[in-house]
Image (cartoon, rainbow over all chains, first blue to last red; front, side, top):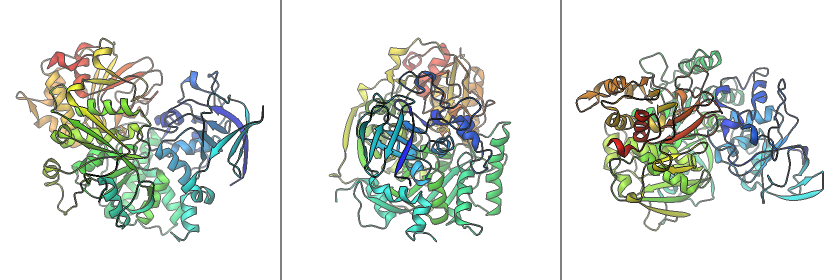
Length: 186
Length: 431
Ligand code: SF4
């Protein structure tokens, strides 16, 4: 895992559920077929209501029409990010779209597990509400050595929380890699 | 001892004397359930990770139900069912319920109950967030993603963090106009969609133990709507009576100790609760039916794992008998067994099937159908500009189809009363 992650922010509100992250009608595509699975990137966050898409202004498409990846690769979310269904297609779709990390106030349990156990995106928590302090499009830097987030436009820095118990799984790159490295499975 | 039911079950599954909230433990899984949306990617990850000679840890502990995208022309959706079918054949699975066959069941959570997979005192994992439904039978059940499920498929094990428990006690007797759906909407309104994150919801009290099993499942089903890991109800005679014809194994029934520790306790008096709705676009956006009555509707939907059980349709029949619906109304039984019961169950001597037909409802085949929108040809799917009242469990933007639709969640009684009037209506007007 890189110790420094840089990218453009895409800011969302509270309770971004899995239908907003990847609408149910798209769950039919293969996640394994390299070409077909790009569709998940294309539809990532396509269920977010227009006025909430890319705060504070809203109405900022996460992905330009014909693309499968986004120019935004750090998501700033509010509370209860990823609530709703158990679909692992949700963190998968964000990964396909090029998202590297999410920084939210809190996560729904299954989404968080899926992001970590599948090694798709890095789910981090801040110890304050960031959705009113960061704007979509801002260049950000995450420092995983010191658990800080810096807004590169004005150099303001925010504290991130350590993932605690699940850090070994994150560092290994997912549940299977962790289980192999620790001898749980062959 | 000062342990909750959930802590006792998890300790048993972890092979430990006792466990404490916050502790990370490895569990031996008693049953893994999957379906057509998450089954194919789970199988793929399992094959990728365990290689050519991957073996299923215990075929008898795997139940596979195609149920989500079943009656559709959508090619990729049908391909997913084909993947399950081939997998079941290749590994000679004893518990695969193929669509198009006599064995087809419908919605997984209700099929688990009907087929006797809900065994008290055990731990059940499923690739579906509403796997918490099974907790109505005094077991630990929760949803996981594909990677976790693939890990279970190969090893029979999974890690969990022991949750703190929240106790919800309902005192008093249930009146005719209230259903379990009203009670759980009350809880969701009070706790919010993240009020139970990483917690266990334990239901207790006279009103809860007066409910029959299908109604209890409505409560545990929606534990996930407050973000809870599981919902649970202790075993009593009603549970045992339901299980008796379905399971032959002996099981262990756990009870919470009187001095068990809870992160929160809520006490409700049934007489203070009235019919409720969750307004668009969140299950915690709760108001009374009374306060939103008159809202014009374009569609009524009665179905899903939370609102498409036989008890739900018995309630609907009470209201629809001899009435005509004013708004297009869709009836989708959760399982094929419930669909069969439409022909045998009666209200005032008339079968449910006849009651629904004569009142002008459209009856669809057992499956998840429009509960989660689904492909464009799904029965009952919400289109742009629609205002729907539904017995399902989620109304986030786009959940039932178009993100330009609005969905109200309510009890089957409230939805039936609203169907007759074409606008949101208090069921007390028809009881
Ligand atoms: S009926 Fe709805 S909530 Fe239940 S399993 Fe199917 S899609 Fe999920």
